[in-house]
Amino acid sequence: MNLLSYNAQWVLLSTLLLGMAAGVVGVLSYWKRQSLMSDTLSHAALPGVVLGFIAVGTKQLPAMLIGAAASALVGAWLVQWIRSSSRVKEDAAMGIVLSVFFGLGIMLLTHANRMPGGGQSGLDHFIFGQAASMVRSDVMLLAVLAIIVLCVVFILFKEWKITLFDSSYAMGLGLSVKSMNIVYTALLVLVIVIGIQAVGVILIAALMIIPAVSARYWTDSFGRMLLLSASFGGGAGVCGTLISTLGKGWPTGPFIVVTAAAMFLVSLLLGSSKGLLVVVYQRKRAQHKRGTAIMTEQAVEGGRG
Image (cartoon, rainbow, N blue to C red; front, side, top):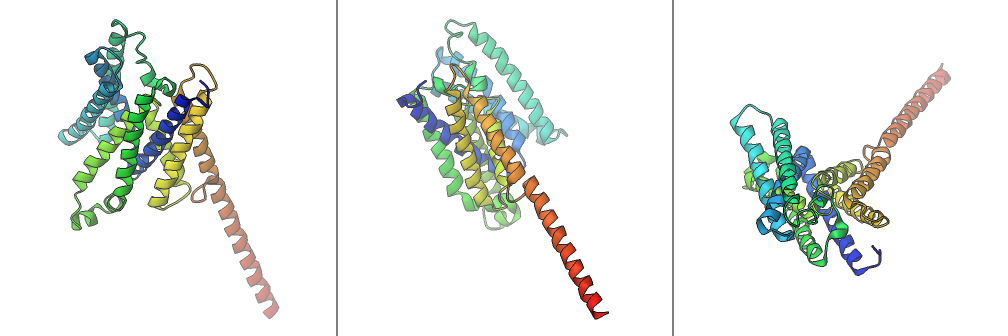
């Protein structure tokens, strides 16, 4: 695919917006300590994708995305139901839902591929992603959904900040923590829905987790973390897409995630807030200052003696 082609520009726009949307929602997951939830719901979306294809008989993106959203929401409800109605912990409930839904999705995918036209439907691309296969109408739909996610996150910035860090104070102000959790789940599902074709159900969770964790190494501010995570996610989307266009049939998702991982490695080492090399340098500098202060104090005492 020609990098300067009209279609390539649309694909780059969609992966840019997808990366930004995944980055900001990933920050919410990070502070809610529910990073595994994104992985769970992304895998839970696969059966819905295949059922959407089976229902209409052809590859129609709106129907498949509706199926993915419904399947992911059922997965989210099951996690909460298992947690509230049993002694199973949340992480174990997520693991159960993830495994069962993904296994069901693979079974349905095998059946769909045996249907007339199923082998040429490109359903396999929803596992690892193939942004280059998207047409303009697909890109427009995904771009609109991504913009909605970004707008909702930033419009409710103050509400997120209060409910994430002090839910008791939020309830005292009259904010509904339950409603904010519903909005959060809806945004999480929406990002998964818009990302499964470009990145795939397996790797979309990484695109939400990695930029947020990378941003944490540069700042302690929630607002700056949102902006940095959006920048890292959008940059990974664009760079990964450009790299994938250099080869014929290269899947986009893995290159986007590898690019995000490279950004994480740089952040891990050089991040101004908690980077490993920065922390080592700060410790050595503090030790040097203490050593200098002790020597100065000893010299002063020696001069008095």
